[in-house]
Image 1: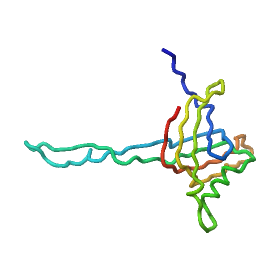
Image 2: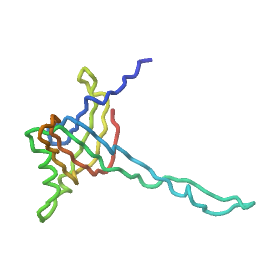
Image 3: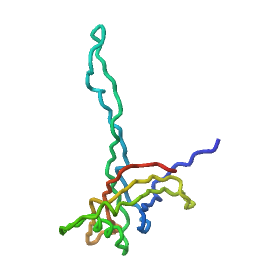
Image 4: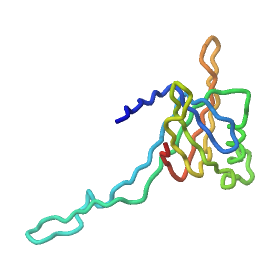
Length: 154
């Protein structure tokens, strides 16, 4: 049996249709959940006064995904946010700017070893870097993405 490789969280990238690949500093919220209905409620009573309960899954819920990437001179991540959200008024165009996105983890040889896809995602929040004189941190950009689903494809 082949030995499984441990995924090290030091080489991962964010990709979205039409954007340049972004090196990820931090990612959170890659979560889907099927809350149960009926687990905490008594649905009735059976013979001998036995309470009837039945836990059943409901609709899936997806958490917004927050992606912090290394900032570069390329503005395409901010432009995607701006195209989806008109902060100065006017019609927001989020529906036609939804993108398929992915988060890929690479091994030391540069080969993709794991991938999660976000379906029909768009940014609903943008955050620029924290700038501090004397700091030696890499500038970053953060977007929060809402989406219609998560799939692990690799």
